[in-house]
Length: 495
Image (tube, rainbow, N blue to C red; front, side, top):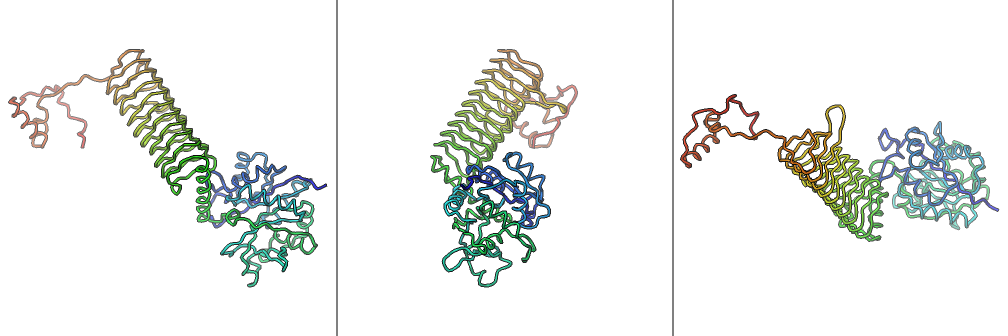
């Protein structure tokens, strides 16, 4: 009885010179995952017994990412890199007991879907073939291996572009470089590969020719050409991103999400949107971001690894690692940095920046403020232009503001600081000491007016002339004494 064991070999050793990048090609990201990550995600639902990833160029970086995204995958080093056949052979050498079916996939095919892999496996298992390969028909097959068939339509060979004559180059059916093999037949064919070709490498495609010569069945499944598209340069990376965007946005809309302008909305494949969420134009949702039912996000918003509660609104803002409560109101132009937790129905308004801050239910930070390393209670109002001064040049300290507090405009709250429940603080205060519950905190100098200062110290200016006219209209005499004993000059006029 044939084994139902499934081994997946992913080829990820290439340098990808056309990317012109120090980053290994398979680690370039699109729609929230690396190219390699997309391939591994596509095969994971097939529940393979073993996943082998052949690494070479940038192997340390690739292996490090594997440990993060697919810890059960086993990296196999290909050194030297002597072709795709050589890569598969050393992968199977690392798993000598592998039997059943071996699926071989490229590591740079982010558009591959699980359904396509499942179709390949189903066709292979039902046909009993030694090999089943995915093919596609494309309008421009330049650069791809061509599928050569006999008169009955059977596959007889895969001819690489560099080795093809004019007749073969005219074929528009290409090899998608995705295969399912009988493990035993594959091992035997790999042992007989040579480097007698234009590249001087061991071609995996030559295995198909060997099977045909030995009378073994080779089956082909024609797939959607888009599914098999690889990424070799930045232009193809952008195209893959656009295709994934369209797929993800379309799936969200089918699940009950309103996307006002799909063409300007970018959603990572890892984003979760609940029904009745509304995504306005020019919005990017990245990483593990989730958006609750009835929430409105955008326009012109970017959220990364954020949680947006049901019914919340986020307008023209940026968030990273923030938790936004149900019914909260964010923006416009707010910046929510990591560690921000915003309570239900709270307001974080225009030009407000938060970091490592907890803002309680029904609390408002309406505008022009910085809230860093702070905890603010419920139903509190933070006046405009308030700064939580959290850093002394050496270490950061935390401030705690209680429930039902009214912090005046233009306050500096110098941490560590506690403001008790129900307290008020006066506008323009620089608070360095705790304010008890119910107290009014005042920390500012008493105002004084120096009569006649402008006419004496800024004679000849428009301000002096306006002051003179106003004084004459009021019937007051000009000041003849300087009531400023130190005759201080201002530190600078606002321009």
